Image (cartoon, rainbow over all chains, first blue to last red; front, side):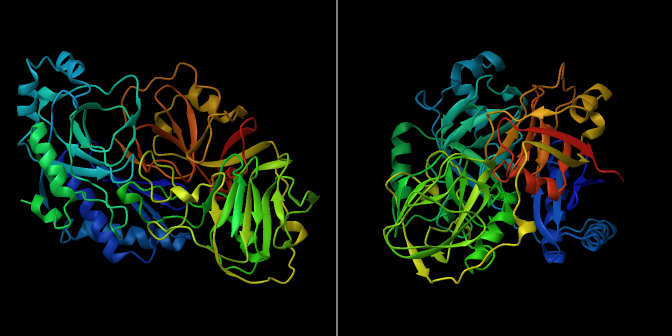
Length: 238
Length: 288
């Protein structure tokens, strides 16, 4: 674990520089620890794959107090705080109309046909590593090695909310429309953002997400179900 | 009510932003010039953190339908009330029917308008600051558009106040910015460090609240080991894989995969609010 100074009020804690669940869990454990034990001196925390960026209140004393909090976490054997992990199961339609980059991906990966790709993408639990890039955008991974592909050279100026993408060995659902360089393979009808809620975003770091394939008919049914006033996100939890 | 007759180049509502939400990918946002915004609010008797209008380069044309006390700070955008010249840094009393308009930008980049009272823009995550999103946007009406009506919930007549002479800043076109080394500073070659630290850099037209891009790329820049996405802050000097230096600002993304060359001091971050395309900046490392 290294700690670097990042400007007058920033400390960057970096664990093993690799994308791995056990490394990422340490990031979120330290995050949770600092949120509970040092919230009076912290302005913001940005957890990522293998690093945690902490901004403390102005003043040297607050940096020293923050170091105390980090060191005490380390000395106590990196004790995990009580983190609630939720397991989501979400429908995705991989039909041609949504699989915008179908040909590109088949060419890059050498996968024989689209049905095979769908089989490789679905029914695999993905870990939510971090949120970033766009509000509520969750980085999920890792996909199986066969799905490894490059980002698009020419970024799309607008990817629609719900688009499901691949980049490297990561996958994601765009929570809102935005520019995007990921390869798009499908569409998920579940809204990942409730703009009016106090906590607007569905995914949290540490959750796991598994996709299952639906055809266009079932997609329509899911869309109706989601719009129904009785719909509750709990229905998607395992 | 205030009618937006003309929106100006980029006029948005800004307050103290959404600090603490960066872990879920929400930029901090908020006014770029904290000093100017605080002064504007002080001149009209508002609490710190009250939303103000942040006006970029070309100000709006606003028709006031009721008597309102206002104040203008930050960039000098040549303000006029009913086509008569008025000045920044003092409380102004507008009558029902008065028109506030602006002319050429004399210095600076962003001007601030505070009213004695409260706006009623929608709040998202406890802030009325505009955040640019493609598609659905709960802050959409916080970016002014022609024909929009701005409602004022509370208004009171503020007695005349003036700022102190030493607080009335005039902004330059060339800026000396102090920086700390960024987390990947040591991965840059001597030539790359020299390029960044020994030159004046031109601010590109491709600059906005997310960041100021520099016009010139680092020559022959190559990244051998890509960075795993990690947090970034307003004030971070990020170098894209093409070698483009960008000074991140309040609306920037919260994480990034590009090397972080340096981090501006808090004072320099504050100065960035008034830096505009065509200005020149120079970076100097803080002596430790």
